[in-house]
Length: 385
Ligand SMILES: Nc1ncnc2c1ncn2[C@@H]1O[C@H](COP(=O)(O)OP(=O)(O)O)[C@@H](O)[C@H]1O
Ligand SMILES: [Mg+2]
Image (cartoon, rainbow, N blue to C red; front, side, top):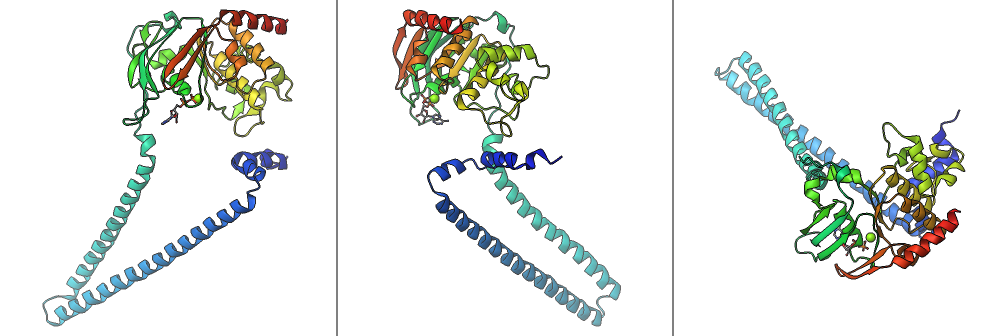
């Protein structure tokens, strides 16, 4: 049987996966220009390698010349001393053998100094990752996350990415009661994703505090908190594995019923069942290409598998058609969750009970829209019937 990955179809898929920009290059007709650029870089690399090889030969020759000259001088001086009767032949041999040992050890020492210098260079390249402080996920407290209500309170929340940079959010106050569905909207770059990351504990507020069910986030502990939440972020990823693996996030003991239930809630079950390998279909790096909407619903199913009590979706339904979105919203509504949805599309925003508009780091509008909720529920009921 031929190797599965060596079939033309599989290699085509891997080619398109590995060469991430190839589609744009083809569409923009920049193949020749990019190829010429790549050839120039290749020529530069070959020239640099030639220069390195030439330098290595020169270094080696100089090294050999120096060591051999030194040996000739030492033997010549020793011979003179023997002729003068100030040295015996045995002493010359002993001296030369010690000298050789000393020289070889010194040469290794110099090599090690160079290796150390290179190590520092490599260290500096990974320092950003290695030196970033690990997340404090646990705290010593008695709080049972199941007893914490999934309400959110942000008090005078301010954030900027670094000292000296402008504030992305400033003195933001927002209270979300448990069970509410709230849409957060605003122009691109106004800080919606940043606000979600603060809420999820991925970023630390510059000042202000976040309380979940009246408990400060720092006191609740990220580990406890993350048991309560389900998320689909803007740049979320699937991992190489089957659809079931991805929905259960590679859980050691997978609950297949819950996997299917989550896919149903995300309006994806029927499409998965229509695939030849069903829930065993491979996705991620090596797997079948999913459409943007399918990927988003799969990410949503993964978030729902955790049976969260607080659901945060950052433009997570932007690729869904309105019918799918209505179906998804109808099933999530039954789960009685607190939902915080970042969205641009009017249809998505219309489904929320409350709309918060962000602008220049603060809330410029906070609208309650009870009537919209009822209308959408009716639509959803009709659709599901
Ligand atoms: N990691 C980062 N470092 C520095 N600035 C960032 C970072 N991420 C986002 N920003 C900046 O923060 C602002 C808000 O970004 P974001 O929260 O992603 O906006 P939105 O989701 O509303 O489009 C933008 O001006 C963006 O350039
Ligand atoms: Mg965003």
